[in-house]
Length: 104
Length: 237
Image (cartoon, rainbow over all chains, first blue to last red; front, side, top):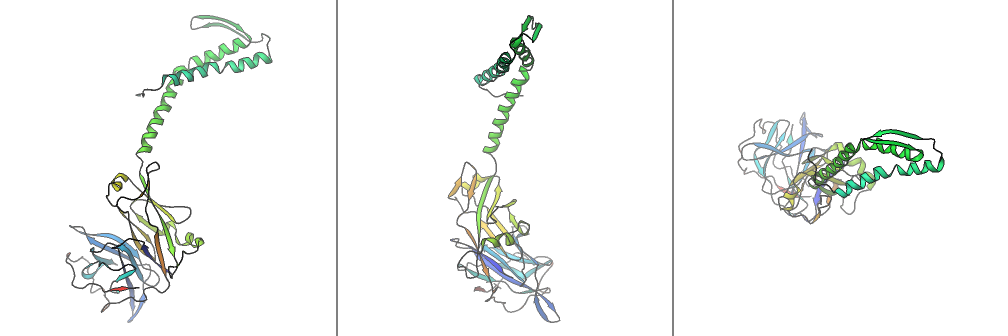
């Protein structure tokens, strides 16, 4: 399946995130498509959904043009990952900040 | 109903037309049938009427219109009031934020075939915030509405995002002090054009980090908002 990423020309300071959701069957990992991945952020009082993406056939999800410095967690199938929040880095244009693979 | 200060000349003109227009058919009937076949006699507002021919026709039409003059004037006033209200509503209608979506090929060298847009950009597969998203007929132009466009013009940014299922989720921030603002139609066009790049080998350089997170690593309740020492490794594609 063709996957699309987003670029905004001239929009410095926007980071792209990506990660993969897989399914473990008898020790074999296979990509999990159609899975919603919520990116939740702390608003000062609670964790709230800032954005979400849905995995493609390859199990990958992408969040494009997100502001560096944002602290977030991923919510997948009712569980928050990773054990502690992650900060979006300031990266060069057209590069990705890779998230750990999550196995459901 | 409170009426605005309406132009009296406009009212006079309307009344003049109402009472003079019947002269036209009367004149026509006079030419067609000049004989005194039409008769009108009686009293009208205290005046004794005894007329024949086209004059009788005109008097009858005049009398019919006379009793409805007040209603006619009220309708004229209502139209003026509604026009004024409509003008005020248009002057304060929501602003439209507009941008073009440009889908690129895998090597980002050129745009994909325009015929592919319809199949990819389907309104039921796209989520956009804030507000409802309108996709233009070209399947490239996206619009959403904001109540207070003046806030944008005053350098208050508004972040929106677009989600295409199975593909990427993209933030579409409205830049501060946008350059392309149509104050007449209340449309703000975001520049530059948003580009999406197709990747035929997804995440070729994807770094899986040290281990795969499982449900045991996850938690039903979110952890406290403490910045992690573990930061996902950055990689370029």
